[in-house]
Image 1 (cartoon, rainbow, N blue to C red):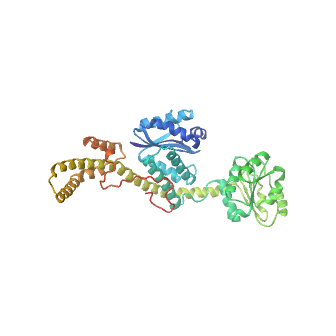
Image 2: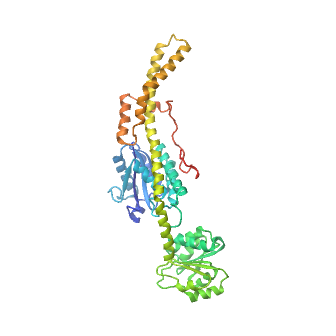
Image 3: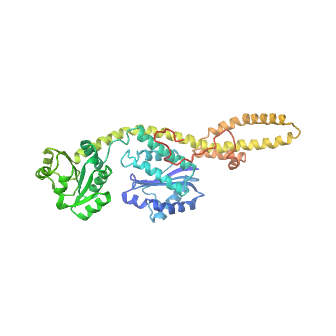
Length: 450
């Protein structure tokens, strides 16, 4: 059995290709039903699909055949040929699969290194696989461990600290000057892609009011309605400037739309207190002379980029710490995985020998009293323990995550004609428990997913 991943991401495919491959939550039921047609080949599967990546994690009988089956399944489901032709994809098996998922969950493989949103997406991906009964004990443990790794990365390192996006840097800048945005009104001028992005970030900070001004009033109304704000026509910009304490400009204008003279008139009509103006347009929407006015704090795109660059550099310095966590957790996962693979064989081997011993005892002890029977039973148990100690030790040394190790375990089963399933619950001194906890069940303060 092999543990594999097949995927496309922002590193291998354009946004258009990623969009065509993406499997949305409402499609998962149909897609998992399609995969279940390959259940003899693909024993467990989970799909992680976001705007930046679509990945298929599987526990499979044959990597080559399963890889091809997954490619064909997604291409048929989406009506494309991106995966079947081998372009834009990557695939790994064994330890590299586990390492990759742990890197994804910790934010190291993200477009913005260290972002934490992916952690929730990993958790959601497994919950969908579990809902459609496509996962089992192995993927439960794998995804639970991945969520644990992501939490460790966020709490034990600085990988997620500091904003790395210009839009979010605008919010942080305003908060540094005005402290709590809940007490202040925010004005966003421009409702295009950039304006909408920064407006959403400010909305998340719950300002007193959020106003959108745009040349196309319908678009301003649409964005304001989405965010629970209000829209004003372009002609009422001065009134909106008077009311706001935080002003963000993000239009496509080629020349400044606000200069020092205009803002001087606005300040005369405004209540006392500072105004923060953030110009994230290129070219600039705000003339530099606005920054010369009393009570005005003006920041442009260069200032925000500088903040974001500093934070990106800080996050990059944290990467080795996160990699260390990943190495530790990959080793921990495979220690569990290898013991899981060999435990059924050990149970079956001991069960087989115990079965033979019990039959022979029954032939010999018909005339024994109960005390003698118990003594012989204890003697037989001790003898079996001594006889099976060395074989058990050797089996524990098998690297079950490798093809060679799996072949060894198969050879042992064939040599002794072991029926592994019949002895799965035999008491051989091993734990019968397998992980059933769902990802997200580990508290933030915990350090061990088991």
